[in-house]
Length: 239
Length: 175
Image (cartoon, rainbow over all chains, first blue to last red; front, top):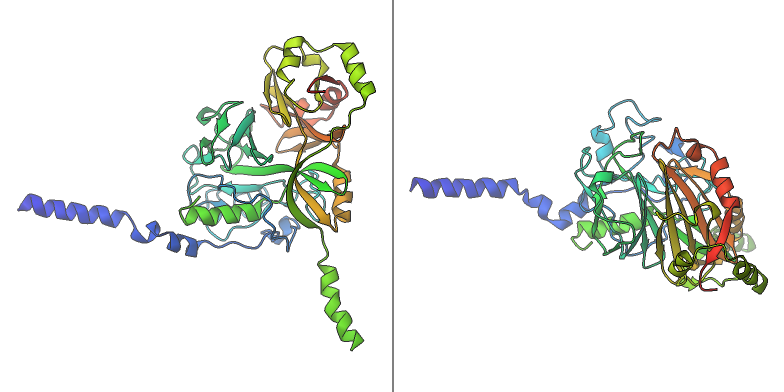
């Protein structure tokens, strides 16, 4: 009798640990919030391309394996080089809403940003402020074309090139020339930037060729709307 | 009445920004027979390298200095190629691509101007020195990534990559 009671108590304990609400996709999606594309935070961090809600890379898989994840600024976030004082692991960096940082102030040429310069991609924090715990995954089927000391390049079947930066080199699950499937693990999110560590995040950007008139040029495309779209699918359990 | 009509029309003009249409396609390779002949006469690239890039339906360029490097990695397809060249403490990469993914079908004048400003400009992004450029109607990208992105002059100054860029030679492709 005592054993049976103990088993019932143990079962109850296990079921409580599961957090039923967190298992429900609709509750996850209800918690998710984001500011519109081009609205940077803080506003002093740059001028985004407001009003452009076009999804440049449709139907990609979200680049991190699991939710929650947080798109926001590394430089202007809490603990960042130009951000509010505090720890990089401050909980304010790990909460919704998301903020686009594709056009954040940089000196790099970016034709699709209003000032012609910007950050090229969006920075994504994983669920918690722990390095080497969360996997970045292939956003579409393709081939790994280059692996540098802190970069991995994936050329998707769409012809787009996806760049994953700051993954832990020791954790990489892919090799140059390897074909990968959508959702396949690439490596763990870390703070790797060669000999100079950065904050723990994934810098994710996408290059593609755009034709304007007779002119074709390879550019970094605004990726925020594609991230929002893919994240919603991840939260619904259909990545 | 006219004033009201004008007010109604103004927002349409304000929104007349570039309109993008998804349309994958291939860029036309514009390589003159004179250039092909010059390449064939030079025979500068080793045969194994030429064989490895023969599948690529566009001119394949790589830095002259490294054509005999045995450690290079080539990832190639009919419409693109990437050549990675390991250096001491850095990785040099050149890629070529003749596909496009989007076509701006209206109002792209401003974007075209902005694009011209960045074409063939040497830039450092995330510690990686790179340049995107057009040649023969298709797109190429050249970059160097250093283990020490803030201390290695190959990634902090343009001179190293500029020299590589100026020394690019045609090594093959399906010409």
